[in-house]
Image (cartoon, rainbow, N blue to C red; front, side, top):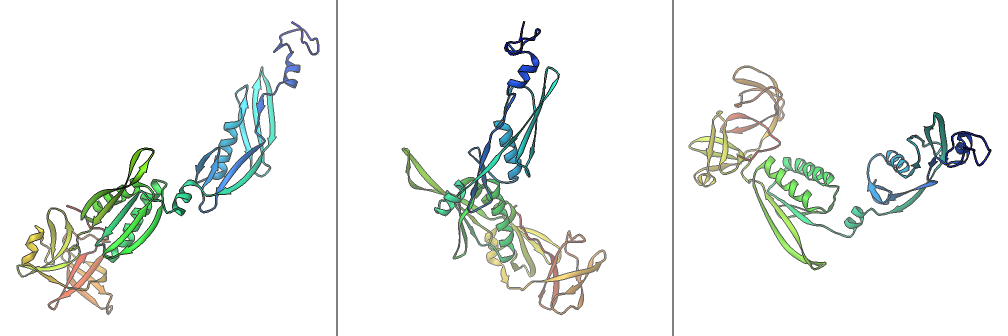
Length: 323
């Protein structure tokens, strides 16, 4: 066979000898530009019609590689400073290399998530009731994590009588957050739906997840002439006696108990022995001896209360668990 270009005899490729084929054939086609759209409100970016967050340059490199067409197996490298892509491969033992310049074209608009948020859109309401001050920060962290996991948003956070309402962009985030809050802190979870309209011939509902935390958690009661602190709730209340006793009662049994309003304060454990904690009181920085709470281990937080001339210590939990 003869090359139709130079007349050389031998193996041909589409009528051309190897040298002529390598000169005329385009082995790699590299795009001349990539458009990146940035959200005006958050750190999201869109490349090839897909909104993403995270490493933009890694996404750009992936997009460039996905748009390169090649006739042979190739390896590519992207130089962001020069704005070039170099493709390399081999054909019939010959090394093939091509470098192309790529323009990064920028656009700006709101991503779909921020557009919905700006428009006041929400799929569910998460109502949290009865949370104490020390629980609020942890509850907020749970909600934020679930929102981030769902790539969603909080449209509005509203303080209401008895608690807080969170208007959430994704029903799944509200549901997961409500269940975790109940699991961590106890209480009751109720779910309700309301019809908000019709779309494409289908009814559209909005869900409300209401978590009511146990009002007794952390409270002190005098029952049968003993002082107890409520530490957990479920079908029964778990009481922790200041003398180390653990007791389980039904909520209705509290009718024969007397609620005692005590102001707890932090204390620092200086050292301890088998049954005693030696602490420094945060009120006056004096040292005191108190009975070691049941199950206490070194490193655990301690608070103290004063009642009828005695000082009691108890282990301080930021979370209270459902039984």
